[in-house]
Length: 383
Image 1: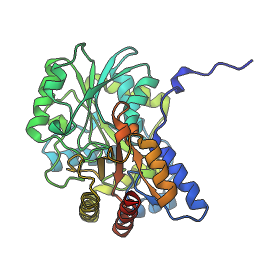
Image 2 (image 1 turned 180 degrees about the vertical axis):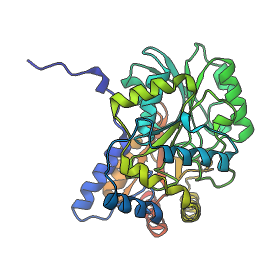
Image 3 (image 1 turned 60 degrees about the vertical axis):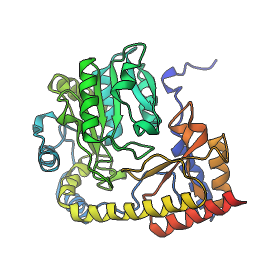
Image 4 (image 1 turned 90 degrees about the vertical axis):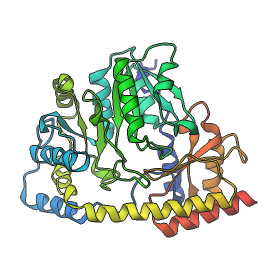
C-alpha cells in the first residue's frame, strides 16, 4: 500500500528549470546550447564580493547569524535605500533572506492565512502562484495587456468581483521587463491601501532599468512588504542571499518563521554581500551590456517578423508573441532547443491561460552568444 503524499507538492513545475535541465543534457552530449531561458547574469559576482568571501573563508569562523541577518549587512541595505531612493528604512525592519525565494515564503506565511486570496497579474513569475498554492493561499490572476504595460492598475483592482487580501507587483516585471512609472505606482499603492490590500512588491530587478529608474513601493506604502535580492543587479544568483523590508507589525512573525525554517541565510554570502554596495561601477558596466543585448535581440526579432512584444523597460527579458508560428509554446520551445540549441521558456510558465502563444527570451548573457542565438532562431523560423 502506497503511503500518503502531501497535496502541497501538487503544484505546476517551474518550467524554466525543466528547460535548463534539457539544455544541460544536450551540452553533456557535446552539443552547443544558447541559454536564453534562464534569468541569470553570465558575469561573476563583483571582484570585491569574491575577495570578501575569500577573506572570510580564511580568517573567520563561519557560523550561524541571527535569523534577521548580520547587522552590518542590514545597515548597508538601510544606507542603500537612502542613497538610491531617499527613503529612510530602519535597520531593524530589514530581514536578510535565502534569496528572494525565501523572502516570498516568509512574506506569504506572515501576511496571509490559508484560504486568503492574493492577486497577481498575468503574465507573472510562476513561483508566486506555485508558492501561494503550496501554502493553501488562492492566487487570483489579473488580466493585463500592453495598454497597462502588463501591470496591475487601480482600474483592474476595481473590476474584481470578489475582494482580495493581497497584491503582488513586480517592477521591473518578469517575464515582460515592463515597469510601472512612479505616478502610476503611487496610484496603485493608494488604491491597494484604500481597499485594505496588502502589497508585496518584488523589486529584485531594480538597478537594471533602461528608459527610466524604478522607485520602491515603500515610498508610497509603509505597510508594503518589499522583496529584493543580490541575484540579479548584483550578479550573485548562486550565493542565495536577498532581503525583505517588513512592516513592524509583521517583523516578529517573520523572525520566528525564519528561525524555525532556515535559522539564517548563508553566512558566507552575507559577509560577501556587504561588499556588493561598493561595486556599483562594475555593476553598471553589466547594465550597459544588457542594454546592448536588448538592441541586438529586439532588432533581430523585428527583422524576422516578431514585432509583438511587451515594452522592455528593465530586467533582461523579452516576452514575445509567436502565435503566427504556434499555439503550443511548450512544443515550440522543445523543438527550438533540439533543432537549433537555442533554449527559450514557453509563455505557459508565466500565464496559464494565454501563455501558449508566447515565449520568454533572456538577454543576460554574452553579446556574441545572444547574436548567434537570434540568427539561429531567425533561420529556424524561415524554414
